[in-house]
View (cartoon, rainbow, N blue to C red):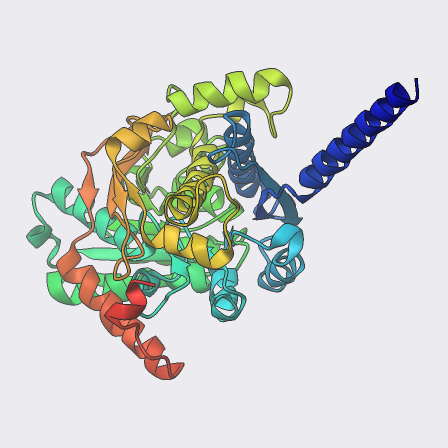
Length: 444
């Protein structure tokens, strides 16, 4: 009897120890933390909300698929209102949470400029998909910045190429007049250097027309356009500025088919209130457009929304800005996955390890197709020298009801863009007294 009691006691101790061990292991199991800097309030909310919904839904989809080699993602949103100071506050508040931020996507060029100074100290990669500092494509100077999939210089060059094709060749732009209506902020000013370079090379006149944020008052701007009669007008706007510009163009009789927006001025919120009045309006699409039939969208609907876990309305899933948020999240996640390939599958990655993963992305077409992005994107491959990884774009046009692609794939002209990146990055390095990375550092 005594022996039976001792055996029972030993068993209970063993079970208790197992429970304690399991509990400790569970408590120590880490998730990969991703801060979400978003803006769901203020004048930019109509555009910021669908981006944030797509971003968060994709993170939920990754978890629904089992995580990154079993590592689940955690995230926390912080409202910035598209304000640089508030964006920096959000970054500071979230960067050390839950084991530390894997990476940060500021969703603001102004915030990108500010956080760029902090990233090397904090060892957190700054991922700016299709925005941010154009010269940060040079990874030898901007070790922690990743303008993956394209920059504003790529966008501006793609628009000029599209206009050139419409005119019968880029040489036909000689003597033409182009106007740039731009958000008077670091974001709006980004394409100016490329456009000035192309203006000198191709011989077109460039008129620069800044618009004070948020852009609800543009009557004086469009009066200037009516007087100057530019052959084409580029719109570098965001939020309410875009629909206001299209309405003013309609009111002044400026042809919408001669307007080309940046990709932040080419989504459903920009045109839906104008509808038929915006018909013919064009915008550059960096890789994707509206993609309601993509496998990724179908997966989100079945694995996230149908389970009652969707972040926003079901009907916006697959729209332009939703897709941009989802694509941005995917590129960050794939940076973490690439890091795991080197530093350990199924482990959480540090900010430094994620930085290496982002610098060694190799998203082949089969990989993109497997992720649900077939027909949406072209391959992206980054390196120490090239933190952009691709420079593909298309033009889509509003037909009064939906966005439709109206061009073949266009590629930013490297003969123009690369020297501009190199000289501007070199100036930044000189100003900040930075030594460009050595080949040895590129291997680290």
